[in-house]
Each structure stands twice: as structure tokens, then as C-alpha cells.
Length: 194
Image 1 (cartoon, rainbow, N blue to C red):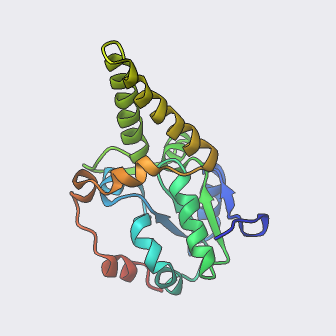
Image 2 (cartoon, rainbow, N blue to C red):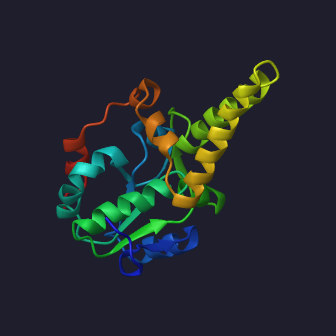
Image 3 (cartoon, one colour):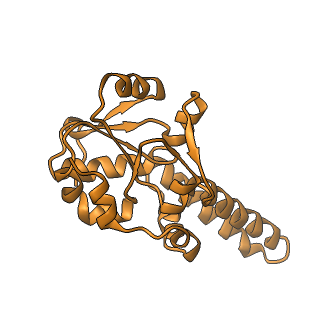
């Protein structure tokens, strides 16, 4: 789908979201992080539909919602992708929480804490940093190993320019991110009901 200025979702900061929640009771807070991330910390009242599950079921989500939808994730990247998916199937009143759960919490917003997994952006930083460090150390013995560090740096640059994260997507498929609370799409859809 091509993104144009006419179909970009409205962005809210934490203060604007708090104001919206005070004015309207029909706002759906849609958290598109993995179930493990959601269990670790989430905004009270939010509903979890992971981005990879939303991909094929965006229309099903939209059919169960009457009011505005505010999409959130850890930092904002997955939220924007989810908002575009929902807009592609006809969502009209959709917004993205700028900075995600991190910004919400930094602005004093309360979260429900549980025992979950590291947020995806933290996992990406760990893997990317480890690969770069490994490449640099190995390059002391094998000069060509420097290209590992260069490739990861190039990937991170591409990720920033395109506002995508291939490494995060790959990490999302690892057993660590698939374990923890099981996700039941039908139960999630039922929790969105009118």
C-alpha cells in the first residue's frame, strides 16, 4: 500500500491521549506488541492484538469497534504499520500514540505491570549491539569480520530511513517471543465487542 498525506494516521502524544480518554468512553486502545511484551507492561484497558495477527484480521477488528481507535506499541513503529492496515480496510477514526508505551509511561501515565518479555526495541538493541561488537572484536583476528559490523550498521540506517525494522520482525518469530501467554485471536476479537 502506498502511503500518501491523505491516509497518514493522526498522531497523539501522551497528554492528548489522556485528554481523549477523559472526554470519550468509547476509545479502543489497541496494543499491537507481542503477548509477552503486553504482559510485561500495558496501559490499563488496552486490548492486545499483535501486529502479525492483525495483518490478516484487520477487518474483523474494525467490525467490532464503534469509536476511535488509538494504536500503540513499544515505541511507535509497529503502531504506524497497524494503523495503515486498519485504514486499508476502512478505519476512519484512527490515531497512533507517538512514542508508544515508553512515551506514555515517561509522561506519567500508569501501566499495568506483569511478568513478560523485554520490549522488542530493547531486544533489537541487544542483538544489533552484540553483532557489531562481535564483528569488531573478530576483525582484530580476521579483518573481513568488520563487514559484519558494517552490515548491521547499514541495516540499522535503512531501518531508520524507512521506519521499518526487519530485525524486530525476525526476532518476533523466535520461540522466546512466541512463548509466554498464549494468544487466542478469537478471544481477543470477542473482547473488542460492542
